Length: 192
Image 1 (spheres, rainbow, N blue to C red):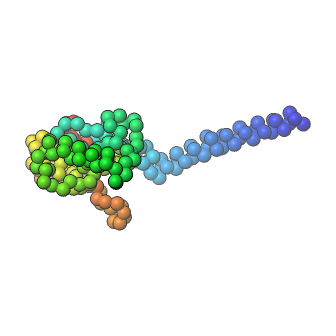
Image 2 (tube, helix red, strand yellow):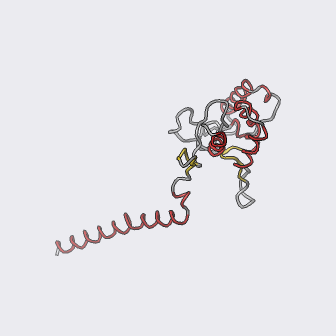
Image 3 (spheres, rainbow, N blue to C red):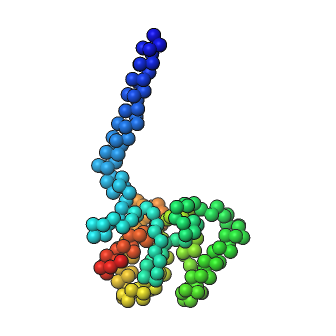
């Protein structure tokens, strides 16, 4: 009796494992790959048939010829995703924001008297946000155009091409994916 019960239990365990642990995940992957191929494969950014990143994860671009994403709460290590968890009344948060603003003004004195878009000095919740506001991109456009020796109108046209409006016309804010914008800029110029 014991041997028969154990044999049945073992067969049932293997069957459940095959169905739930192997069959169901493979079915889900297959369906998502057919229905949403770009999203199912990581929302990859391709330039000249080469994968250069993902639309979902902000990449750190350095140098004046690139648009910059939001500051990262993770510092220089993108492997540590997370927010600072500092509240709106936090003195430490205020000091961080003023320091970021001062750093931007040192690099770009024309910003001294301007009101900056919040996403230019505040970090995203995860520290890996790939999007910036249109106002942020528009402020950066003259710097990128100057560094690349391009007419400002050409850079602004690339911003407009890479911009996304509100989802369903209602939700979220108009934005630009920095990853896509920078790679579109590089592809338009034929270099990285």
